[in-house]
Every structure is written in C-alpha cells, then in structure tokens.
Amino acid sequence: MEIAGRIALVTGAGKRVGRALALGLARAGARVAVHFHASTAGALETVAAIRDAGGNARAFSADLADPHAAGTLVDSVADTLGGLDILVNSSGIMQRVALADVTPANWDTTFAVNLRAQFFTSQAAARRMANGGVIVNMADLAAFEAWTEYIPHCVSKAGVVALTQALAHALGPRIRVNAIAPGAVLLPDGFDGARLVSTTPLKRLGSPDDVVQAMLYLVAADYVTGETIIVDGGRHVRT
Image 1 (spheres, rainbow, N blue to C red):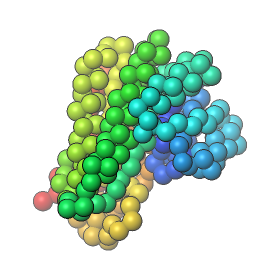
Image 2: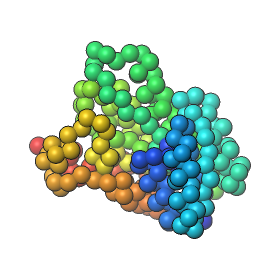
Image 3: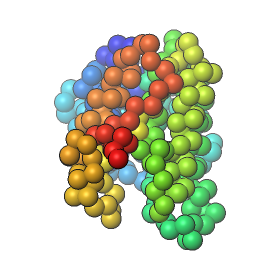
C-alpha cells in the first residue's frame, strides 16, 4: 500500500513507541489520527510535532479498556477524517506482578487493553475500510518467552499473535493483518539494560525507530499477511 495520502489511526500514540509510529506514518505522508487515553499532553505534543513538520494530524480520546469504546473511536476517526486505511494497534500496558500477587483485576485489565481492545478496534476498522486496508498489531517478545513476573502480559501478547493470524485469515484478501513483536527498544522500570545488551546477539538495545521501520514495511508489503515480525536484535535466537 502507498502510504502518502492515506488515513491512519494509531492507538496509544501519546507516548513511547506509539508516538514514534504516529510520527513515522506522518513522515511517510499519512493523515494520522492520534489516539490517547490518559496521555493528553503527550498526544497533543505528537499532533503538534506532526503539524510543525507540515503533516496532518488530529487527536482522539478513548478509554480502550471500555469494551464499547473501540467502535466509537474508529467511527469517530472515519467520520471526521473521511475514511480509514491503516490501523496500528499500539495501546498496551505492562505490569510487573509476581505470580503469587496476580489478582483477577490485574489479569482482566491487562487482557482488556492488550488483547480485547485490539480485536474490537480491528473489527470496527474492517467495517470502515471500504477500499481495503492494513492492520498492524503490536505484540511483544514476551509472546515467545516466559517472563515469570509478567505472566498476564506474556499471555496477552501471545494472544495478539494468534489474533493476528486469525484476522489475516478472516479479513483477507481485502485487508492485510500483521504484527510486530519488539524486544528491548524502550526499557520498562527495573530492567537491567547492560544484561540485555550482553545477551543480545547484536550487542545493543534497539530504538523505537527500529519498530517504525518494521511497521512501514508491513504497511507497504502487499504480499505479507498473518506475519509477526520480531524486532529484538536476535534475542529470541540466543542460546
């Protein structure tokens, strides 16, 4: 798909990797809907950065932990901007909780934001992508590894990989669906950066731009669907 002139929605675009993804699409010429929930200031900064660079962006607020918010968000973006061509499901949470301390609330909140929201935004987007489109889901290296203090997170991201494959099958050929599983590109609190570097084959941490490059490839790659690209410097093949 040619990105220039397309309408793109990036969820969770007010901070971290989501912001980088929104900026990357704008640099490629897309008109970007910047979704946020709590990160109001960050979303406005993202919009301002895109506009200052000559791009087109607008902020949209929604709490995607609410199961009804996804459809409302997608409809609002499509009605306001005149359609929808690209959806990037970047919203997510990552809570560090020891196995014995995981509660039903921890579990349900993680799955609501990391997995359920991606399904319902994709479902709504499929209805509004009249001329076909592209969906890129954000998974995580945790989908393929056992992080014992992040079990709900790991399981929810493994669900994103399965969801991506199922949606690719259900929505093809009109809509392509792929995912990205980043490794250490922005470290959460408590992660040992030096240890991660030493155990990564490329011997360095990544950056949000590495994820942006993968996203731009998946948006443009017209013969790729159902794929999850791992962007982790080779950590998943370490011994």
